[in-house]
Length: 540
Image (tube, rainbow, N blue to C red; front, side, top):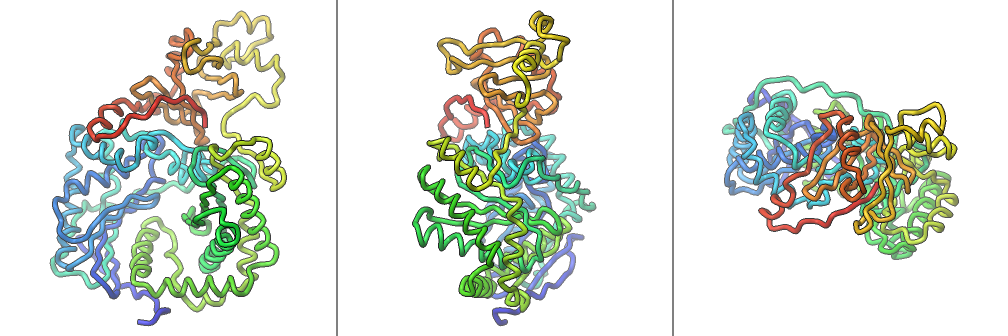
């Protein structure tokens, strides 16, 4: 086998499950790939795929070969490496464990729920502001930024329904790096892959744009529509150019990572993540990154950069690990009805500088920057940078922008129900206002509550009941509201004077299925030996 040989994929079936195998060097690897991931969930089940992964592995039993499982936006993967018969035994046990979850009970979830929480941390129980939700809201790939918000409310009935729907022969693939062992016996219920809805369109937000939030990394994300081979080379060029500029030339960052997720059969979502350590460095890094990419869009890459990118891809393809990864990803994409990833080929070497230039030029209009709030020390400097780079701030909450003060007062007084004039509105009992308690953490703040709306008066933010896709109260009474746009607010109504009845009225207007409480966090963390996070009250 040479470094440019393609992977010759053979096909068969095992227990009715389509099986892909290729004779690859190295230890024998086998995987069961189930075509469901985080993007297939809903806000009210965020984290369910990860919990199911843990529940399956907990029932596999002790295994002597190297093995693991992973849950991703696109799939669940259970794999082992070693003697072919031992690998076959592992895959057999995985399928048996999955089938056994059709009888799982609520009390069976406790330990694995705690294990997942220990793995991802208590902060994952709250929605974040990342590159995906900033672009798509609380749907599709945007669900990735909702983290594990529903984890503590998930039930055994939801686990059973998830397994019955997705762990079927038509929604699974077996992947092997050698011929199937005679002992291979993997059995799942017979069934077709469930239909998938088309990926949602991006939110109606301006691009190039910028969103401020709590994501740890400074990221630049794009929608890329280009030939798969051109995308592959362009991604390598982008990473190399940014690494040279941001790390090797200035030392402003340690890493530059480029990740890509297929949105559909022609569109890929790219996220370029960097790690500046200070506010000043973050501003410099963002400006330099945008300048670098705009330079690529105008002139294309230098010859040495393009040659390096193609050589790096060729070298990577020569690795056995890369070919195994390609085989698994090919199965994963097949399950989603997407084209297999592009392997190294003569076409890769034929991509020229103009092809890369055109790909970068095509993706720049979709630029969306996700800027960590903890790196904002000078709002005026950030605003000047937005203007310099032509970035429009994203506002994912409803606001009172464009309304006159009189109209705002009427809206607040009537609780969003409207009115014929200010005098009548002021006599209305529909809308109530509540100041933060003098001795509480919300002192100096004020909220307004109507039958179907919450207003954070100081921030000028409105949340309508119809926009809420997830609401959950934790053990301290803090309530997180997540909206369709992926925006979220955390507040405790007990910290506002005389707000109890009005808050209950607002909550009663929410669709019942969106209420998924976070009760039991203290108990779960105590069992896992972890600290309980402090109470918070923020909007994102």
